[in-house]
Image (cartoon, rainbow, N blue to C red):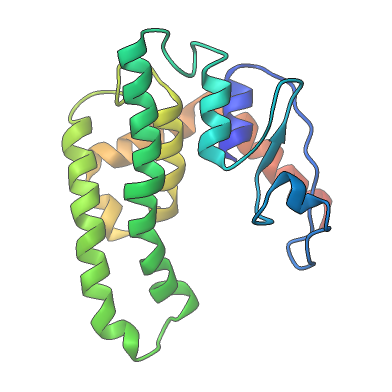
Length: 193
C-alpha cells in the first residue's frame, strides 16, 4: 500500500506482480528481494526492495513527496526512518501478543512492558506533531509512512489516547491518492478470491 500510495500521489502509472502468500516465493524473486518479502520495485533507473528505500527513491524524483530544500528533505527522510525503526517495531510485539499468541500465559506479563514502550513512542510522535497538519510542513513520504504505520493501531486504545495522531491518520486516509491506492489494492484481493 505504501508504494502504491506514493505512485498515486505523483500520478505515475504502475503495474503489480502478485505472489501467492501461501506458496514459496519463486527462486528468481530472491534476486529482486533478498528476503522474499514484498514490496520489490523496478523502474528504468533502479531495482529496489524495502518500502523505505523505494519511497526515498520516488520522493527524490518528485517534490510533492520530498521537498527540494536539503534540510527539509533530510528531516522528512529521518521521520520516514523513524516510522520504520522507532514506531513500527514498537507495534510488532503487541501484534504478536494480541493476535498471534492471544490467550497464551506468557502474554499476561509481557503485554504491559510492550504497551509502555509503544506509548512512549506514540507520545514522542504526538508531541513532535503537535497541532501541525503534517510533520515537516507539506505532506511528504514521512507522513505517508507514519500514516501507514499508525493504521496498524486502528481501533486501539493506544492510538485513541493521541487525538492528533488519529487526526493525522484520518487526513492521510482522506487524500485522493490514498483512496485510489487502497481501492486498487483491495480490488486485487477481490479479483483473486
